[in-house]
Image (spheres, each protein chain N blue to C red):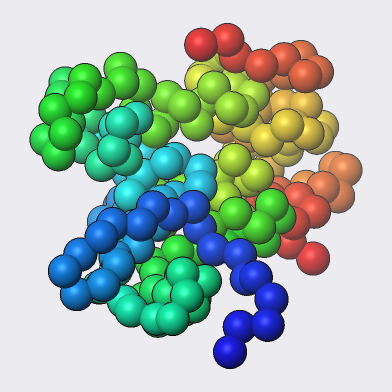
Length: 95
Length: 123
């Protein structure tokens, strides 16, 4: 898939609420579960302080990340698919 | 008639003058996904069934690996699994197994035969 097609794919995914770009835009209130924009500090539904982390931050913490380019990679990856960096086995990026 | 308990997403019951509303939550992010119209039934189990089958479940995706009900944002539609089970993969430039460069458009690595994207989840 060319870079241009990949970009279109990612834009479409974001528009429909899928993908990492969509996750970067959302914080979830721990108190009531309301979804808020990533730049808000307080939940508009219940007034509770929102977490610092977006859904994307939590997603990154749950997976292995390439230390060179910060791409989230699958657990079985030995090399980063984006930059080719060798990954240490079972190395998780600490948040 | 419900003969056995069917699993639903995590939910909370909200009393309403016309019955009970069911608020369903994404099991990956904890976000509210939908709050149903008020439902009434003889038992709470039947109410839950009606709320889930007629309205709630249309807003969810079920992970093919762990079985959790998740919202669109937490769903990897490429492989029909939640993003906890299957993180998103972009078009690869290098093989995740041997590190060799993968030319654009290749489905498999020419060096080790590993599938370029998503590995074993795609049969």
